[in-house]
Length: 216
Image (spheres, rainbow, N blue to C red):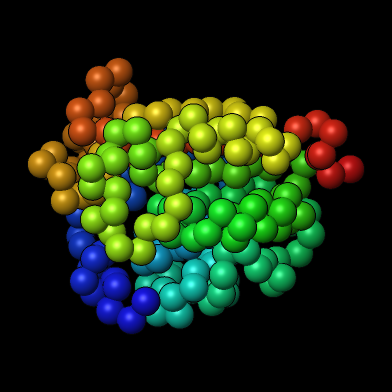
């Protein structure tokens, strides 16, 4: 992964604008002030730095992520399938943006087992990532993509693993801030509120464990 962030996803002010607005206009409504939030594959920390909650935890295989996180974020460098540093039943909200297309199916399934372990009752996993149905022609422009998911296959996989789908938005956001759409807070808010999503190629899926798998 040496050089990947510099070449493929360099620091970009547009990404910071995007995530500040996404947290404020959309994701914050899903997170309470007293919650513990865990971000898988935090990268530059654009989500975990901006979401408001009581405790923030971040995991990424890139050790350089630590330099971009706010002081209150507890960071662990390692695989998203190994959450040994996170206590059982301690997390309310798990978030993963553009992560699971970069890992094998086995690693994803192991990650789900770990998430099941750390989630509190009624906690959720929240996944934002490319929807192959709408971006198949550019999906592998990122050479680190190794697994393919659409909104349909991702939801089916989660159901098989014991999760109930709470929210499924096949077209949620454009694939990248490098798209033709300008990046500004007012436009992002309008885009989120609009039933028409031009260039939307990323999906958002939110799921909760089935009742028989809920921790007591």
